[in-house]
Image (cartoon, rainbow over all chains, first blue to last red; front, side, top):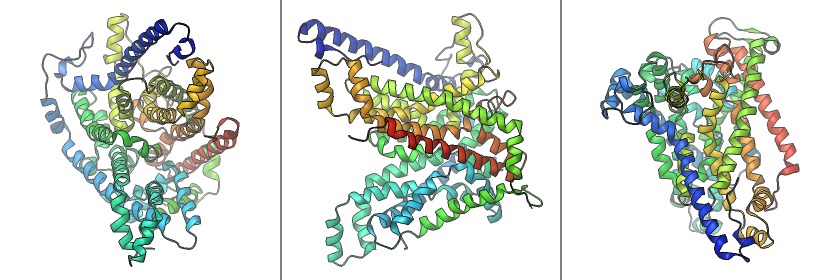
Length: 294
Length: 281
């Protein structure tokens, strides 16, 4: 499985040959990996290529990468074919407001669990974490009933609020706040700073990297969310998000593959940008996505 | 308390309360419109006797049994392969992580197109093998496999990153010591690296199991659960009962059954971890 070199073991007897063999193996390893990566990327490349083809060249045999022309108009046409402008607006609105709420609520409670002393703190924290166990499938049925009762079906707040209070953000930021040296907080307290000053003047500025990671992963979770919008939004043309729009476009315009690929590629752009932007911080957000999936 | 207020109220209203309500609703005949009547455990006994429900449970288990091992083997294998000596390592991490983050609907639309008659796979098969590819999503023999393939493509980047990070944290001295003692690359992987990263393997297995039981979007978008009910999963069942047939009580009960299954599997995982997970790093 691992094309590791064995030079270190054998190296003492035949250093030269062993090293050359190892280098050759490393080259082969690289080439094979590039092939794997190409295979992996093929669906995305194929989608991008199709999104730029004229409609009558979508199904060619053998498959081609580039059509007779690069039709960037497909992207414009996709927006005419279905209200994708509206979908994108809705998705951005919901994701941005949702992210804001998540970041504010979790930094407040994360700070409380990390630095404030009150009775029953540990118990309450365990209770917080316990809510993570409940999967979305259990929640959606009563949540829908709750939305009906509140008259929120087909509304932005129904898309935003039900999933804006996760224990993850709280947990993530609590862990971060715990790493802030206690002396820093204590010396501020001695200088007469209350919890609010400590929070706004010391904690939040220090937590900026953690907040950024939380914000980006939350944004992506909202951006890709499908099951809940599918349930709570009836009037897709007005309140639909991008995933909803794509899904209904697929079932209605099942033959307009070039336009569908254009829309799919556009839906992926914000996520891809954020992944590239996050780069080395991806690992820190793993927990937030792992249970996300909504 | 001002600090805790928003989260506390939010979690109580949108998580604790619905969890309890789900249990209550599952004991009622609860149509979306019209009269609700208390039913006791009727919904649960109906589920147990329902052949469709039995099938979706089996389908979900089949998906889990196919998806989880393939995902773990692919991600662990690749993570070991893309070792620190590989150039452009960060690039692989980013590339494999992209479908994890892109909307599942967008991924599914792309794969639906690949599986399409005349799509990439079919036209490749026609021009290379000279015969049309099977109707991947339309035939019961291949539909589940098509869903699993798409899911692995979409999901393994997550575990890849988990494993890749874990492998980085294996102490260098340990591997060097093993090498000096004459351990081959393969031996070093199986005897040193693998035991050292068992906590990550445990984390990844648990998480992948939990999320794979909740599979919904892939069958919904690729096959609509078909042909027949061949690829309908438990969450798809919850969705259909609740929002197509408007049986909220039954849907809530099915959701609880899924929750109990997930809790059971997770509990077994945690009980079994002592046998193979090493936390002595």
